[in-house]
Length: 244
Image (cartoon, rainbow, N blue to C red; front, side, top):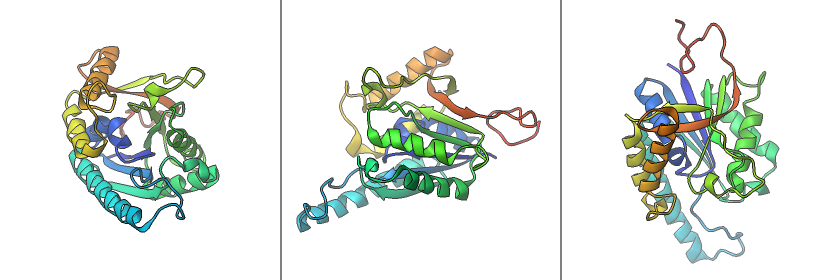
């Protein structure tokens, strides 16, 4: 059994990015955790700008978001979801060291061998900072993380501008048997879904999986860049802590 942690910026990123891979881990007997940094739904105004009616609406939205996250967790088979509910699209208002410390606490608590996080070249600033915080928290001599992998997020990675670091996949996961769980989990985030050809649509999710699958000669795949990796001789199986 391997412990796995996905560190993402917003509710639904854990599905849009590595969702089918997390489901594959879970169905292989691995213990899968998700850490979500930002809350993603409530008002983006300051406390002075938000009136009582808006606060009440924000409370309802926050509850709805937690219900969606719980339903997606069940669809993927995730062991536990940890939400920090930091300000949406305002992670740049927090010191990077504070973000890294928060991620580091989760890494210490879960003790994962594999961590998935965002591609640092995404246009969304929350994604970029989540990836940077993760790289700090998972550095050697600080954590026991063996593999730190970056994933693409539909509607963010594909919106990167010229000059941003491109997403360069190097590892592919065959998800032909678990893509349906990713689709089911994304249906749980119904408030985040859009109609095709928007990239955050079920059709686009299926199309991306088929395209990554064609890259890897399988029917459906998710793709990852390697941010850091260690493959000890005593652990020849990339995805397992078991001796062979």
